[in-house]
Image (cartoon, rainbow, N blue to C red; front, side):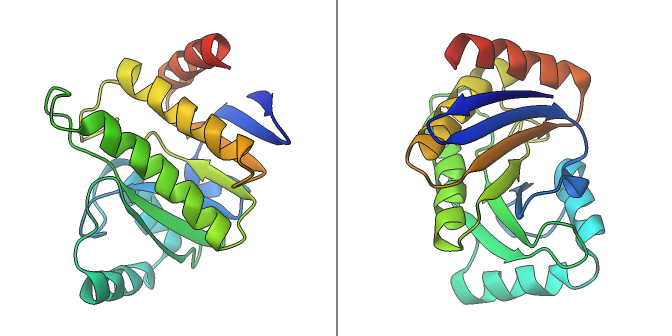
Amino acid sequence: MTTFQIANGVLGLVHGDLTTWPVQAVVNAANSNLAGGGGVDGAIHRAAGPKLPGACREIIEQRGEVPAGQAAITPGFDMKARYIIHAVGPIWRGGGRGEPEALASAYRTSLELCRENAIETVAFSAISCGAYGYPLQLAVPIALGELKRGLEEGLVRQAWMVLYSAQAYETWLGHAQKIL
């Protein structure tokens, strides 16, 4: 675990399990239907329990699919976290189809939802870096930039990147040491 002081807040990097991290909200790398899936999305759906799919369906019925770069919030149900923010990142198609802007927006929108819901502590997954194929080396600086900005603006008090693999943690740490 490594932490960085940013303005009046803390940005933390940790190798661990997002579903058990002790924060008020976790940010799920969701698909546009909020339907659950593999990777972190599937793990969050399993950890939250049987009420989460209904809450996600209700959001889709009310507003339609959640486009890349946007997010929606549900209760955390059976998780330690009180809320789940379902952030939809872009599918990587080479970087020339608005992927960087959509990825930045997914982080920014999640942080804005934290502010709107009085969430002070939040843990993120590496949005779009799994099944959506966003190259980690390109995604990390975008994510760190948005997290830094959110902390500087006081949108949250603590923002954590909870990384499932030791290799991902080392990549994030290397970038953070250069950027922060």
